[in-house]
Image 1 (cartoon, rainbow, N blue to C red):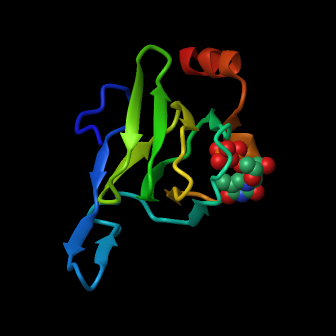
Image 2 (cartoon, rainbow, N blue to C red; image 1 turned 90 degrees about the vertical axis):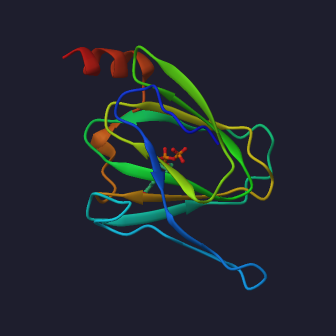
Length: 141
Ligand code: TYD
């Protein structure tokens, strides 16, 4: 897991973490601590057995999200239109801020990978930029 993010509208979020092995670990993401927005939606992605799976390939106009890999690993690629950065997501203690105007892709999932996302708003298809050229135009406005 990388410790420094170069792209805009992102950053590393450290969850509060209690490592109580052998009785299991407890990780917490809480508004006012590691999370600076009201969480309106939580979604998770699992069942990532297909090696060819590629997810993401979009940006959001306004949505704030934080993404965690809570089991296994995957590669997160962030692109703010100028700078691109690949992050190996393999530590459940660290989330990555997926702020607005940030193109992202998710690839190279381990079969046991589980991704958890905290979102500041409900699902709105109108907030998506699903075409890369449209994304580049949008961020130049
Ligand atoms: P999408 O955000 O494109 O998935 P990913 O970035 O993980 O590849 O969403 C895939 C589909 O699921 C798309 O048709 C929209 C739908 N969806 C919802 O209905 N609600 C949600 O909260 C999310 C995240 C997706």
